[in-house]
Length: 309
Image (cartoon, rainbow, N blue to C red; front, side):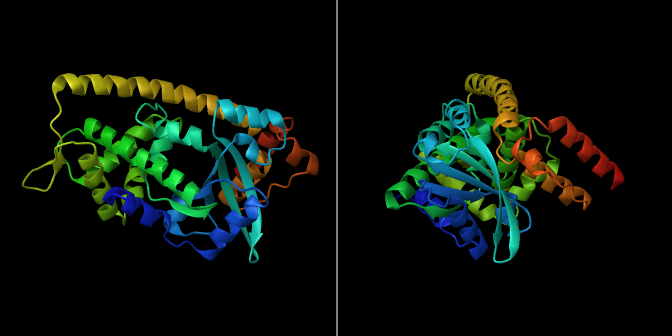
């Protein structure tokens, strides 16, 4: 195992609060995927009341317990599928947004040929493997995460505006990837990802550039930079602009798909309203089971609650 893999492996197995491990195990039930990855703001803050983010990596999309076959089919062609899960763990109500993707889909979307920057950018960030089936599955997931890091650092080298410290290189890269998605993020979001882990991000940047064969230059102020020819730079940035256009279409398609396949979407909406307003949005059993049919009523009620708050 090379130095980069050792760092990523030790990060994946870092301890998490027992409630997180219990949530993952209870969520899976009888399902036995390759593994469950825990990431995002909830992981960085250890706030168990926040909306948690998990990725479940399966062999085949049908391995998850989907409500119907059409949802499973949608996940095969436009992954990931997303479900909203609420569970009581040790007397505490915990909530999570759970994305499900096959290992083949995951591996392709974190590779250098992928135009889906939203996937590889997520798994360049520190991530925890909170449930894993066996050592073979752990190796598959580690290899995919390593591939995500190599892809991200290649783009970081090509998109960096000039000599910069490693933290600044990462902030610039994450800001660029957010622009590829249909979600506005403030300037501090990229910085918050790196905060407290600057040494870790510097280490994986240095090791990845070494693995990729990039000559690392450093000026007297400690800023790192790559010598990239103007012709190559123009080509790469043209490719990035194309990725941005494709990425926005891809995210738009996922949003449309989510309107029809996001399991427990009405509960997700109700919980989000309550977190933002402090007011409860109660759902009938029919509304909880059929959020798409009830969408106009749900949106009207949500609007009314937010106006009152």
